[in-house]
Length: 520
Ligand code: BGC
Image 1 (cartoon, rainbow, N blue to C red):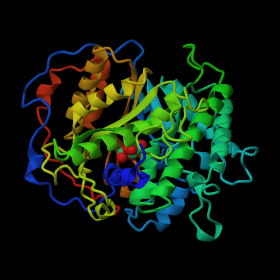
Image 2 (image 1 turned 180 degrees about the vertical axis):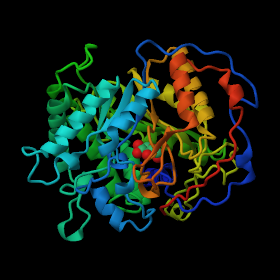
Image 3 (image 1 turned 45 degrees about the vertical axis):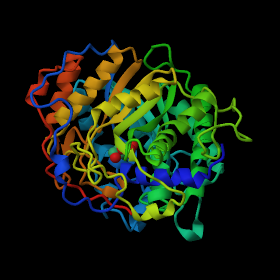
């Protein structure tokens, strides 16, 4: 069925704009947010089963958010240009590039056995001339050191090849030398070459690969809200082009990783396991029973959770974003099908589908369209104003299970600077995960976002997602374990959710900080 792509994608603009935390000051929380969620006070849920043998307990980080010094990247250019960003700089971050030994020791102290991290393309190939024959050998050596140190600390690495950041020589924001980045199909070949390089260079140390982090969130930030480079606002045509190029690039990188990485680093019979990290949300209609609201909700679910996965699992590419693949040029593409070994799921929150009407553009003026508190939804929220909704995690897991592949939770977490929310958040979300496994879902691992506080993109350093909090004012960027770290370790040690801990954390208090959300 034909429908204007703009009709569908404008709906996504609102949802993901808030998903990325890019929506103006939050202001005071209304009374509705004061309610507790989940199990009522002091109610202890029934015990739940153990996590399976070999379950990957992990944490996650991304290069630009933790390393510092990534000056050959579009995000570094963007920091100087972005008018809606916090004004803070990634260079003032946790300095993982130099302090990785401490961070890996801290990860091991949680008794995790896995770490999701990234290798940055612009770090290894800072110029077009360097690509692909002349990598920065110091940078390559440092990444080898980091991977070796991770293994020495008993951490199985999972490596992301693109986490929102692109080299300037491919994505140049300077008008005189402009390069179109993911809008230019030339990036498809380049990304496959980058994947081939990583497979051959790092394949002996790495078995778990993520090609692209959150393709739809990348588009929402760069082309809908404008809080990410290139800073386009509701430029739907360019956004669609980027999604299509990312789908093709993922499929080509999948092939390159499998061709280039033949070393089974952990001797489990699988030298390379490749996926994306897919941002998946739970959805509800803003007005249950209202036809437009229900339709908007289904569109959002399809576009944000499914379209990319459908393309790389089934080969069914919905080129005009009309929620079906029966139009000309949309037949199953064997070059896309079967390009996913597991489903990498990033889960953060619940979003609402609202009335969209025929003309969507007035919605540009309604940036709070998905702020659940403004719509009377009674859920606790994080320092970032995001609602906390663990049952939605189960909904998303059931949706991911449809693909018949193993599932790995590649990110799940919250902004909580004083850890008053994180302990219960961990209990509730991991309880849902354990229950899903008990019900037969094939879930292989969980990576908490994040190991350490880091640079939260346009929002800078206020939102603190770390299990370890970083003192960004101190010269040595001191790390300190929050209470959530202790709860996470206890869950890992028990290999189940010790339900008696619900009694220790019976409710979510109001967040003590409200971080400004920047953007539109
Ligand atoms: C991204 C991370 C980000 C986190 C919290 C995810 O969408 O992959 O880079 O820090 O969410 O916003």
